Length: 208
Image (cartoon, rainbow, N blue to C red; front, side, top):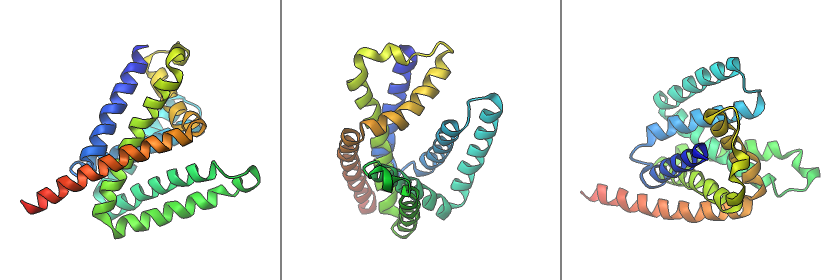
């Protein structure tokens, strides 16, 4: 049970920081988001082996550094990630016949969101970090509510690290899709609160 508690607490902490203070610590959040997104996608596509793990971490670190030192590229990349997540959510409601072409919608939304991110940089940084943090908070909250009496089933015998990796994969994949409506509603509500808070703080800093 300890690995699940650690995962949830860390998710809530990181999500709250991103949601409320995302603009102030944008670069660390950007690098962490790019790295964690790449790692999550890689582990969901390939088997979890030592070789895959090393390559994934190295490429993830390079991508995160590129996002940091190429500022506009980083903003575009973060926008693309957000647009891609939104696209995946949208196609989950499509009928099976149309869903097979869903990758086109995901790609178009990712590109469009990336372009908008570069054009309206400050607002997008606040909006994206609020949304990213809100999603990081909403998913484990929904998980605890839905699976409270079955948490033991998510403990892996391989150890704490295996439990955390598999739990992260499950929550951000299958669980988020199966409970997409309630997860989306909670995410939007938390994100709006975070966006308003960041906007107020940003306005205060400009007036000082």
